[in-house]
Length: 594
Image (cartoon, rainbow, N blue to C red; front, top):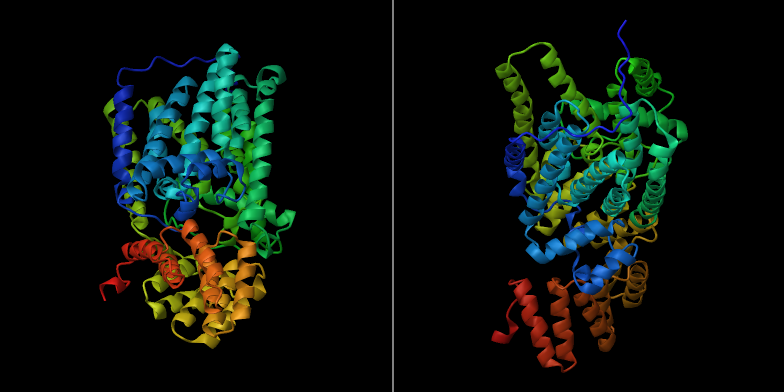
């Protein structure tokens, strides 16, 4: 019978760093940037505009709002949005700067992972770092600019863990204070960092075979409290400001338990065999009445039981699985996440959790090769082959982030039922003037989900551009029926009522839209046109000025303001806005040349 593995309760110190560690780190950075080369040439996609600092937030006052106004940004991650604020000052709207930062942060996290594993004396530290840096499931987090919240928060997470391990070895308060500061920085970048305290307890259990309340738990109590507070705040923002509520989230506790088991095995499968990676995976139907849907959750319980029985031989596998599963808890179905409207799984949700299984796999491979007595040359060849294959797959995966049409077309090729991709691609086509193609995608989205108010509004805009006012009105009204507080549809119907010369109705609808969203620049612009048509020129100018302040790059608002100022006899001011409108949109005729 094998003797139980015993680990001393004494602090584990890191081995001396080999002279070539710096070169390995440089090599890791180099191959990571090579693997993400296609993404570096890419642009902004999907909701990047919600994260790359909006015009209204680019001032010092906007920086204050980032920190002290809920709803000013998509999610309350003020340190993340402060980073975006600084980056916008550095490279403006050039996407390459944001991509370079994301890749650099990702590679930095991989090196920090190696440093932590070396400190813990876990075999395969650099192999794990390379696998993490090059695994294609990470592409979504690194190539998608919005997910800087993943790449940057993980840097803080790993730095906090590394410093806390130093505190655990020395018990010096200054290391605890520094680790706490880094932990708070991580929380203010993404709330999933709240899983670090239990992850540290798993590490201590793996090291010492038990958890001591005074030594291990007590110093982490403030972290648990901070993590819980940030988690509750994030859940509130997700529900109230983003919209994570409604029929899509009406799951029973039993359904959520079944969903959790299925999600866990899905992510395990994608880590082991990263094939058919999709930005939007098909959304599952969770039905406790189908016996096979119980199997994944049962399998999770069985696997944990087996690993618990194996702890006398080695605690490593159970520790790795607990880290993986525990880090997944915020997104496996027990808490509502807005993206559940599209799918219950996403590659970026396992960016941090994947570390547990990657470390387990790397340690197992290195230990297995050593015990097999493989020659050094064979070991090097095998250990280099895995990162090379993963890098090759990541290069291919990165190509889908080249631009928005490629991004959505690739998503639809892999998941034709992805209604969000149909809707967003339709929006791009509508803006490009390809109205029939746009209509095809909007109608495809409604075939999948007939109750999507956003798609009804977009389809109505296509019909409005095609001068099919009755069809446009039908879809705008349907969008408002589905969601009475939907400002976009109120704005669209208000614009239509203006075209129909039904000015009082137009004003009522546009005022309602602005009560819901006071910073809706297009609604201010439309209301300005309605007021001007009604002869209320002074009020119209105020609306156009508000639109220009909120959206300085809106050429139509500058042009409307110029025309209104001219009618009011303020010709010098009018010329300034007219020149700006032409600069933003050279297709506007130069009326001054006539």
